[in-house]
Length: 126
Image 1 (cartoon, rainbow, N blue to C red):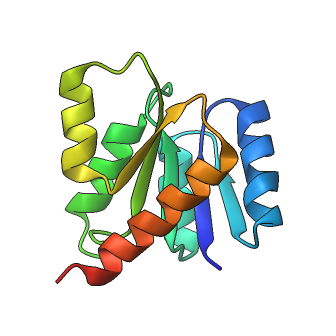
Image 2 (image 1 turned 60 degrees about the horizontal axis):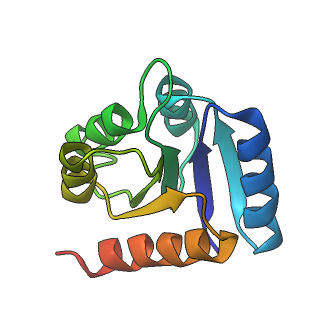
Image 3 (image 1 turned 45 degrees about the horizontal axis):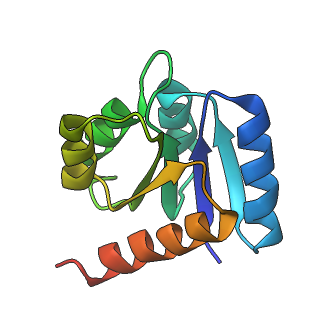
């Protein structure tokens, strides 16, 4: 399976999602925000990033933008996880720079499908 960088500021949600992803066969690396995620990416290679959008410090949109601006991580698959309260402009930006998005609350299998979709999309990209 894939190595997933899971980024969320909510420790309980991050823990539950991490356990579910591990149970599904993925290796999981956790980060509490975008800054910590960048630190993790400097030390290790992952197959996909799954990130909350709204977090203190560097949020998910800024994290994805930083990854897209870096030649080494430009094509790294990125899945946004967000609350339904996202406005149209933010959703449009997520669609533009990300590969998939999942709305909270969601079923765990929906997240797994979005991870596979993001990886597949980037695999097919020129």
